[in-house]
Amino acid sequence: MNRKYRTTVIAGNWKMNKTPSEVKGYAEELRSILGSRVKWCDIVICAPFVDLPMAVRSFRDLKVGVGAQNVSQFPSGAYTGEVSVGMLKDAGVKYVIIGHSERRQYFAETDESVNAKVLAALEAGLQPIVCVGESLDQRDRGLTLDFVSCQVKAALCGVAPEKARKVIFAYEPIWAIGTGRTATSEQAEEVCRHIRTIVRGLYGARTARATSVLYGGSMNDQNAFELLAQPDIDGGLIGGASLVPAKFAAIVNAANQE
Image 1: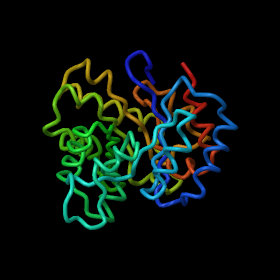
Image 2: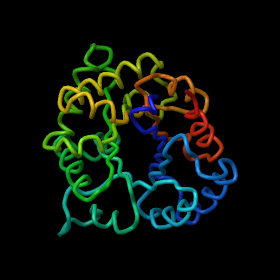
Image 3: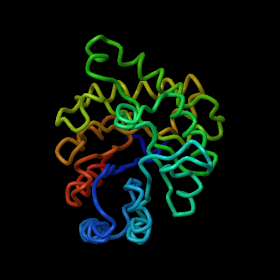
């Protein structure tokens, strides 16, 4: 982490877990552990759509930002089942995850649709958390950096320089999501540093220094401190561990290091 130039972000991705009635209890338990507002990092909870109104209310006094896990690239219209950036904005949502590997794998999201969603989110004033990462086969074949480069460049296509620094990237190696396997701190740092290098090539050093790059891929309360000690890892996108307030709070506290 490097707080001199950029914000540390600890974001929980609840995926398809928790009902609206469970949100308030989670918030109360998290509040009892963390106490008053955390000053050393931004905390985000990315909840299912039906949980978002309750999450906005429940986390407001904790100063925890609320994010969605997906968004439509279209502003409105005949797109049954979709949720627009305007709807999220009006509900009080601040962040949105875009391009998670599960969306790419199970729901046929492409680099093109990810880019369209990034542009829509930025236009609406939402802060996108863009996920990138390679498969195990791509890593074994030595294609990790090339593949991630393509994903980053595609996501930023058409993004104006003044908006580029608002994009948060999350490096999530597909082979480490939900498997219990985690990239070593050196492997994670290498790719996060490479993402910053790509941003630097596109927008210059100042924007690259200001861009927060998170690590996903099974970050938990046991490995968070070591991962967050890396200079180019600016936080985490937390899956399973974010469902348990005590574990999520431990990761937040692990971000309180020099």
